[in-house]
Image 1 (cartoon, rainbow, N blue to C red):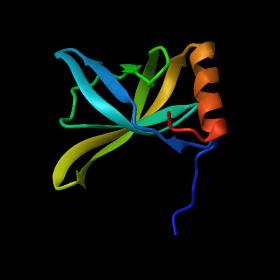
Image 2 (cartoon, helix red, strand yellow):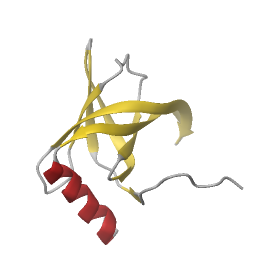
Image 3 (spheres, helix red, strand yellow):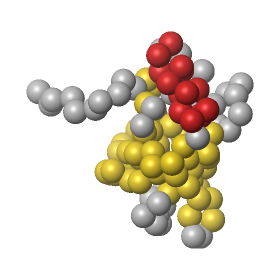
Image 4 (cartoon, rainbow, N blue to C red):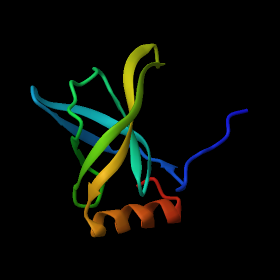
Length: 111
């Protein structure tokens, strides 16, 4: 059995995400989120710098801009398709956006 090492709780969310790269933008979807990070699935592996600019788009709320760092990544088979998934740790997020995410996670709502 794996030991859970996360400090903050997370919930499953399915929010659109836009990852900014040197070559342009790549769209993806969040799988889960916490106040300190997010897991994103996308159709291709993006070329990423050390700092990753991401725009999260929760439904019914304003967009959330974050800067993150890839913690780990891998390819996954979902619905007979191979997708790329990556765990991102937030390294820059506004206090208001962090509070919004904390509220969503605390209420256990997936929006």
